Length: 334
Ligand code: AHM
Ligand code: MG
Image 1: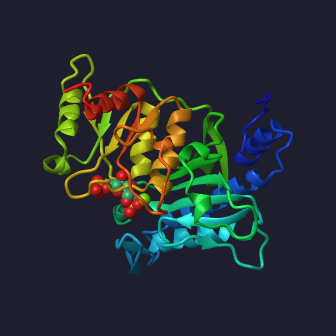
Image 2 (image 1 turned 90 degrees about the vertical axis):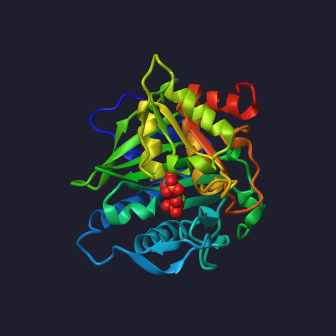
Image 3 (image 1 turned 180 degrees about the horizontal axis):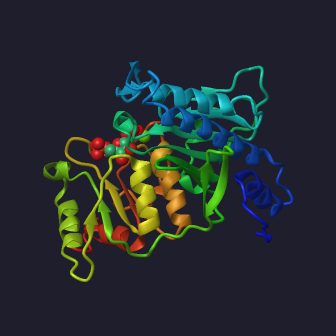
C-alpha cells in the first residue's frame, strides 16, 4: 500500500488494491463500491427505524419459513437494486429469496456472482441491537449469459471477496479479497466509509466464548465437554458473550479473540446458520485474520454446497479455541 496523506476512503483503498493487479478491469471494485452504497442506504434506514413506521414484521415469510421483518425486505431490495444494473455480475442469491436472482434481461451480464444475507440478526431490530449485512463474491463457472445455480455451488475456497457491514453504535464495512482484512467506519457527516481498521488480525487465543446456552440440553456430549473445558481453564477466566446477532458476535470476537459456536443439536442437526450467506463469508474473513472456521470436523471453506440454502454447524474464531473444539468433536480429547 502506498503512503497516504490524510484519510483514506473506501473508494481510494479499493483503487489502490486494484492497481496492484495490472490485469484488473475494475469490475470487482465497482461491485464492492455498489455493496457499500447499498450499505449506506440500509444504515440510514436502520438508524431511523424507530422514528418512521418501518419497524415490525412484513406480511410474508422467507424460504426458511421465518417471518420477514420489514427492514429485511427493504435491505434485500436495496442490495438487488445496487447490483443488478452493473453489468459485472450474472446472478445473485439471497438468504431471503428461494431461487437464484436473475439479472433483468435489459442489463449486460458479467463474470461474477454475489451472495448475501441482506439483514442478519433481524429479530434484534425492534430492540435496537446491532445487526448486519453479509456478502460474498465468486467468479462464475457457467461460460456466459445468465448465471445459474451451478455458479453458486462452489466451496468457500473459491471466494474472491467477502465482507460484512455492522450497523452498530457506528456503521462499519469490513471486507477481504484474500489480501488481509480491512475495516472502514462510516462518517455520517460526509457519507463515506473511512479506513479505520487496517489489516485486522484476530488473537490466536481469546477470552470469549459465544454460544446459545439455552440449547444445552439438546447438545451432543462433545459440545458440553468443550464448554466445560473452556470454563475451567484456570489461566484465563473466559467470559460468555452472546448477542444473538451473528455479525455483532463475530465482529466483537474478531477484534477481541474468542470463539462463536452455532452447533447442530438434537432438534436442528445442521444448526441454524447458512453455508452460503453466513458461514462462508465469515470463514474467509476469519482465515484472513489468522483464525479458523469449522463445522466440527471440516474446514468450512472446504465444504462443497449442493443447495443454495443449506445449513451448517459453525464454530469460528481464534485458532486455539476452534482447534480445541475440533479435538473434542473428532474424539482426540474426551
Ligand atoms: P437470521 O439470518 O434469520 O437473522 O438468523 C440468524 C441469526 C444470527 O444472527 C444469530 O447468530 C442467530 O440467528 C441466533 O440464533 P438463536 O436465537 O437461535 O441463538
Ligand atoms: Mg442471517
